[in-house]
Length: 169
Image 1 (tube, one colour):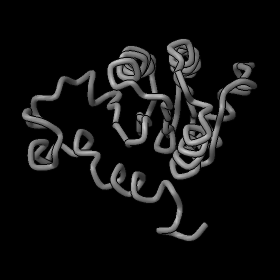
Image 2 (tube, helix red, strand yellow):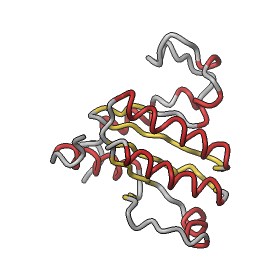
Image 3 (cartoon, one colour):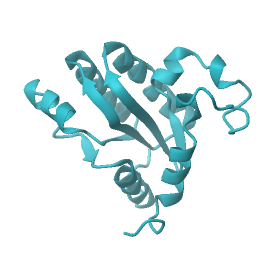
Image 4 (cartoon, one colour):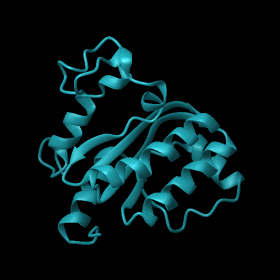
């Protein structure tokens, strides 16, 4: 699939160009993020920002070191957001995660399970080799976790699943 031609292109482009909670210098109001400025966003929301991509899909883009506190922030934010927003698919984008401690990895897997219990499909994308090795060293089973290489692949997968009715609640 060429650039600019896939079903996910517009949503991925919008998500990549609008992560204002991750850029403190941006104005949330001017970027369509609501009435409050980014400097007023509580820290727990920027630790695990849930971004609506459209079409019943939300994503949590994570970057840097994933520790227990950030793992808990994701666990608190994502299941709540999928219910509040009526999402049918949630994407955990760990492309930017350079390292993850064992409690955080376990917490992310519990978060995937919690999201699935709400009736929402969950996809993990962008697992780097260091994080993959940590998962293997911990002996964790990812057999039931849907994984994709990139956010673009995960979004395309989600949109296909939802258009086929597989993500219906």
